[in-house]
Length: 135
Image (cartoon, rainbow, N blue to C red; front, side, top):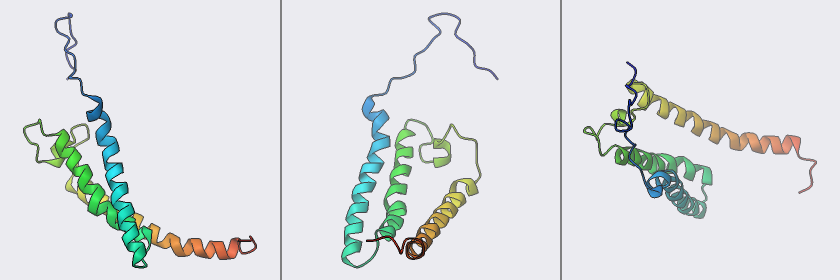
């Protein structure tokens, strides 16, 4: 059903205005918090002889995902069903549990495996292809 168009000036309603902190904050805050968490974790891992890739693999589910879920809940606190993540994302098609749970986990696992496999592959390519390059 098509929405009814305003017929006069009095029918037209302005959408609520949001402050700049509300519009920019949810985009910048997760990056700042995640970066700080990652750099602290990478420093601790480096002291124990572990790589920064492992720190990033741990920082995403431990820090970034809870931040983003919290932002979804905060943006949905005005609705009646504020505790449902699926109802919080109103601009999307209605998905199944697999769409919201299994696919992100599967993509994360694939990304983690690709990141872990890239280290020996990069080392092998540097030896085979760039051994002639002076260091």
